[in-house]
Amino acid sequence: MKIINLKLHNFRNYKDLELEFSGKQNIIIGPNGAGKTNIVEAIYVLALTKSFRGNLDRILINNNELNMKIRGKVKDRIVKNYEVIITPKGKVVKQNGNKIHRLSEHISKINIVLFTPDDTNVIRYAPQNRRNMINIAISQLDNNYLHILNEYNKVLKQRNSYLKLLYTNSLASQDYLNILTDKLIELGIKISNYRSDFVNEINNYIDKINYDITKRKGLKIKYISSFKNQKYNNLQKKYKYYLEKDLMIGKTSLGVHHDDFIFTFNNKNLKEYGSTGEQKNAIICFKLSQIELFVNKNKKYPILILDDMFSELDSKKINNLLKKLNKNLQIFITTTDLNNINTKILNNCTVFELKKQKVVKKTYE
Image (cartoon, rainbow, N blue to C red):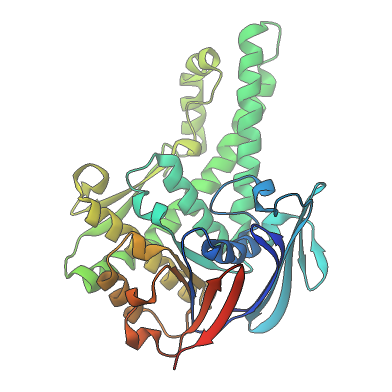
């Protein structure tokens, strides 16, 4: 899978921009604030319909403009044209000029594996950050997962609202709460099964990749969930047990929205016992495992984006990482300095240099 070209209209700091990419390695160089990340962000939005830098669509639109458009030509066995358009009326996604009616149907058509400086800290962050990382990965493998997850979040919101109503209105029927609870259990079991299968598949790769990099064995991800391996009837009993608490706090105490994913080394939680370097390395191994999973499950190579990673990891480690990557991968790297990149890797790269609101394309041979 490769993105051949990209056209931006009113996206971030770009009024109009068109770029033709190499099918191999593309390096985007420029000073901080010049718009390097904006280019790879546009590729990400084209694939996943939202940014990795915030949830508000409005921030993607150039100042004082109402509309934004990203267009990309992507080769995946055959060439397809994709568009993401944001207007005051909302967001529209198109494939070959035809509107895709549900955004979730578009996810998984363009596979992206993204490294950002924030990702290297995700082990230290709250469980929600790890859930988001896993949700994005699974959704790209199977967009039906995203549909189920969206339904779960909708039912969860309804249940929380009804819990508050029941607490203040003794005449309200509990039958509707039971219906919502049963639906939440049904959807939660499906989500838990997806997550469990995904973690098992990642664990087939992650320790071997870690050994190749560090010559140490023992890296693993553990899936922590109240739903894991639970039967429907057992979960119904648990929801009844937590009902009084749920009514008091107006929230659902039990469910896959509380799941966590623990990175361990030799069965020790890296969040508590791992050094910063070990935590960063675990995330690198997770992302590389994602690539392997895409290739083996979807039979296609994802697009790899390394955004500003030279500011987070030492140059030697990143250059060693680049040498290990499959040559069939299309890679996008943003950096402030080409001196960070090994000259052997730099050869045959296409470089896009940002100068005074312009993008100058160069090919190193």
